[in-house]
Image (cartoon, rainbow, N blue to C red; front, side, top):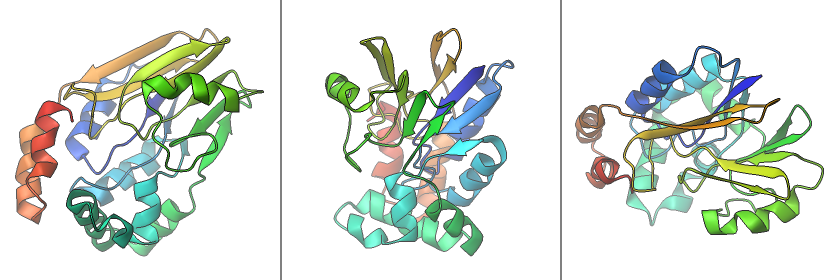
Length: 222
C-alpha cells in the first residue's frame, strides 16, 4: 500500500494543488495530519480538497481553534488573522467537520497518526525530540506527525517516526511544499518537495488584508 502523508496545509491552495499534481500515480490513500486551515487565505477551498482526497484527517490546533476560540492566538497577528478568516469563510458544516476530527487515530492498527505529539497536545516535536517520542509508541511500528513544519524522519528501535513537512508553510529553510509517500508493507520512504506559485499567495494575502509577513515568510521557508 502506498500512502501519501500531508500536514499543515494552512489554507495555502497553490501549494496544496501543486502537491496533488505531483503525487505519484501509485498512491492509494492520502492522509492529512492536521492544520488544514490557519495562516493562509483559502481555508474553504483547502477544506473541500481535503474532504475530497483524504481518507483520514487528524485535527490540528488551528483546525480546533478555528471552531472553538480563535482569540487564543490573539498575540500572534498572523495566526489570529488566519483563524478569523477561516471562521468567516467556512460554512457551518465545514466547521463542524473540522471540530469532529480526532486528535489522534490509527492506520492499519500499527501506525499512529497524530498532529503534534502522541500524548502532549500542541507540543512541537522537532527532529531533536524524535527519540523522546519513541517512548510513547509501544505497540506501533510507526508514528506520523506534523505541527513543527519540519520535514524529517528517523528509525529508532525499528520504529519509523516521520514528519512529512508542511504543505502550506514550510519552516525548515526550504520554501517548497513538503509531503511524503510511504510504502506500508515495504516501508520504503520518499520525502518530496514541490515548487509552487508563492507570488499568487502573496497577492491573495494582500487582497484579503492579512499581515504581509504571512506571504513574505513563504519565500524563505520560515
